[in-house]
Length: 115
Length: 113
Image 1 (cartoon, each protein chain N blue to C red):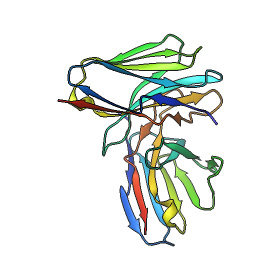
Image 2: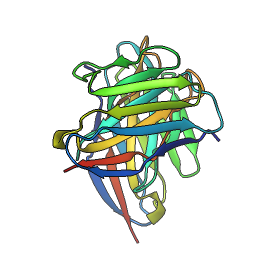
Image 3: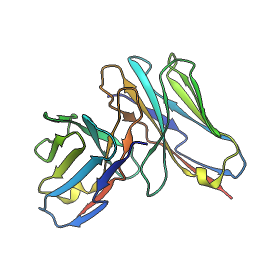
């Protein structure tokens, strides 16, 4: 079946550090990937849609300069949290699907803790 | 902003019991309804993608129904087992949203041995 790999799974770093999270589709090509964020006891919230070869589409309230998304190939999307601060601490997870009408396949997520 | 609601928020059942939970969503501009199972320390796993009003889908002891006119879906688990313990998420895809999912907050199921 379709597999999505995400890493790192856990990051702890100091305030002001930029953190890059990678999301790879291992056995299929994904022209579109999605990045979600989850705060404690809340649902997964879509942050942005990552489009291969073009700019990402950000949801309302998500700062594009804060959360840089690059989708340079059909199998890799990266999310960079720039100059991270404690309020950016959260659980970030990516997903991709093999086609419209198909289920999403998720990475394992990244727990980001900013001290 | 789409409002996808799930109830109950959490549920404890005894092994062998059957259970069900609800996902409600706005019925306008409906395209698809997804169900996922999310076990602790793992990634969400797709259970069903449902598109047609009246759809019923089954996977082992788990089944789901869909009513797009009134905006709800039920997930049923027959003869719950401890390994069924997980958070069950539903997610709505609206027409024109290019596969974007709007998630409910999930139902956390604990099956007690």
